[in-house]
Image 1 (cartoon, rainbow, N blue to C red):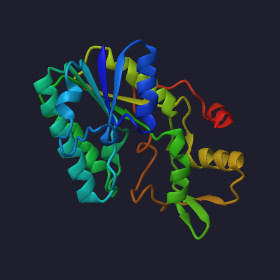
Image 2: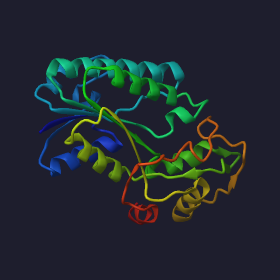
Image 3: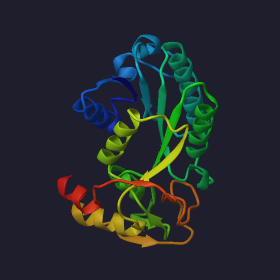
Image 4: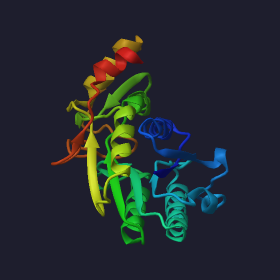
Length: 247
């Protein structure tokens, strides 16, 4: 099966292309680096020729509110139009758990708009909402660092390994479209501060970590539901400790 991975040169994309090829599929990594630009439409038609499925794991280069909204809406509409012309039968998009539960974050409204465009579009689809990746726990800590101290909201967290995200997406790509949304997360649900402290211990990062009720998560107010999947979610197999040992 020919499967196009939009954003195929990124963190998830490279792992996904590899996983699909190991399963015997013709996986094509499509990104501006390979001459495929979903924002302008350049290279889309020839890239999608003969494709059965498209997996969109692309990301916006800017989190500024207007820029990120333009990226996801324009890219998604261009992609869906090209898929319809090429006869693509399944559109899979990677989104974010809790996108509608993080007011104040400039990125999440764009992801919600992207999901709506897919739901209203002409292609059978599956939307996969993932929790934060293990690979970005450090960035979460950095975003909460003020005067050398990491301030985190006292909330539950359930991150997932990028390898698990890629494996789940690879399986979904060859399945029947759900025309719906599923959520995925890691195998462990713990307080956010515990993941950060464990990461710091492994990296010998000396920054102190504290929790504060008024601390924000990337400018958003969050609670225990914001960053964790709800019922009937699928879970990855890799534990944070095992990921740390390998990384």
